Image (cartoon, rainbow, N blue to C red):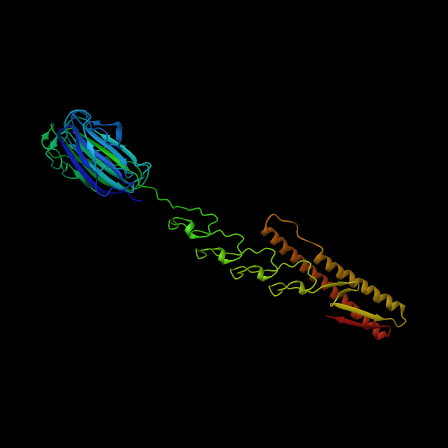
Length: 425
């Protein structure tokens, strides 16, 4: 956020013990007010209510009887309509102004500051401070001049340095001239890059005088991206300021229906978490992005699952004393050849062994208990994959045995030893 000069108010004392300075127009909370002023005599200004003195209080010149005043305040909404301005003691002449800025860092409004006085007494030129260095970019610097000689309310700076903008030049200053009065002026300029501020100088109207100059660098407010942390939010109304740049993600767990989310249009693709579901009717709204996968364990018949069409390929596998019916059934009749009967029995035993292994690979292994529904689901999927792989391996082996058995049976039939009927479901 950039620091911006907004408005200014000004006033004077004419050999008075107090006066009034209006609050600048448009002041709002968060603005910064900078007071600059020059006062005759050696007492200096009293600190304004709610303000902080820069440089520890009034700043005296190298000679003469006058004091510069530099104070600031961050506005909080309690500012009065006007401020009372008074010398620490006595009655004096004074010139002063109150500058208002927006976009200032409220925590540390003054980033850098410093003052300068003449090296060799009165001068017609006022030098600004050496060695004032900003530590952040994009500061706005106030350059202020407090002169011992008054100018009867007229300007005291004929020409400001290039890039400076005048904000106050003894406007509404006190009457009189010479060392019995006072005068003040201020301008601003941008300091885009952090570093030392150039030592500038200006000419003064009215000839040589004692003076004090000051640099006051105002730091910009730090832009922050407000991140609203919204946990377990089901509706946009649960966040009072959802327009503060936060894309609110609604956290929806164990949701079975879109009706459970009052505002599902807040940008979240809601996934229904359905564990242990065997039929689609167990979730009232399965069309909210959830692909329902039926996990069917220990299934011996399709009729055990009421909706087998939900992506579950169920194979009816029935175990019987003579093997797995419906896949292969082999019978033979003895024609008196004991050797042929023995060979057929050996084939049947091998077939049973192969199918028993396939059956055990399908139904003999169960997933271990997991600590979460996601892990359990993953274990189920892995288990089903292993079972299907086992079935495939068993069926491949069975096919090999059946092929071998067919060849042997064909050979036996050709030799006239046995009759065999092979049924494949």
